[in-house]
Image (tube, rainbow, N blue to C red; front, side):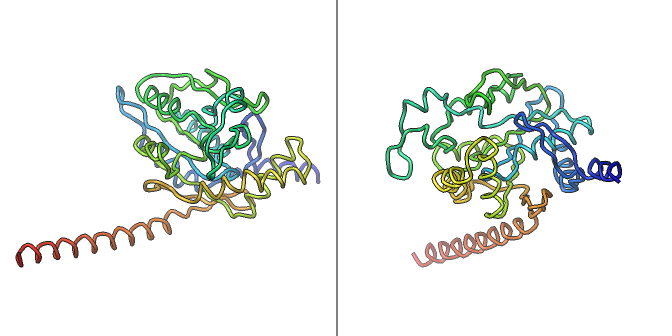
Length: 285
């Protein structure tokens, strides 16, 4: 019986190394093969062309890193050289966070106390790496969950496509919205609020905090970051995925596209009406 159960477990899950930890994900993520792989294949540049960027954004706890590693695994089986890097490698160093403050929510706070918020990232350095990576091979920094700090030259980028994952890649705020010019493919990953809460609290408990301290941290930091991430997304999203409690992904792109098409239709109607009004005004004048 135990052997049968073990075989069933092997058939239904896949082990991936995500941020230095072994994570089990459903082995058959149909949405990855049906939606992501065709889009990634279409992005492969011709020889001599600049490499393409894919942005995967969404609130903390949605599983962006896991999705990125799953996409890399599936892409490699298709012969596509996909590199995965993270925005977390562009946190300011801990020594900087400990000694600098920023205005967050209308008050001055020490950056170390809001680590993970947009203000705790070195956005200029991130933009510089995007520009270099578009045309040359570059070793990217990464965030070490062991050292709790940034490690330089951690991830060599040499592939045809670069997938960048991070909470704030589509944030509709000054500076961050300028990133919209880089990705050729934009993927947004969401999840139910209750699932995000349990995942983020569980992550802190696994890191050594008590349940009470983890819940307090969620209320003070993670909950605000989730709300801020969802509060405004800049630019059009190409693929929208929703993480479900069983670990699978649901493709919500069609629903998103319908809403986008309706918005575009309304805007076109408005523009046409405005043009007719302008022409009438000119004739009357």
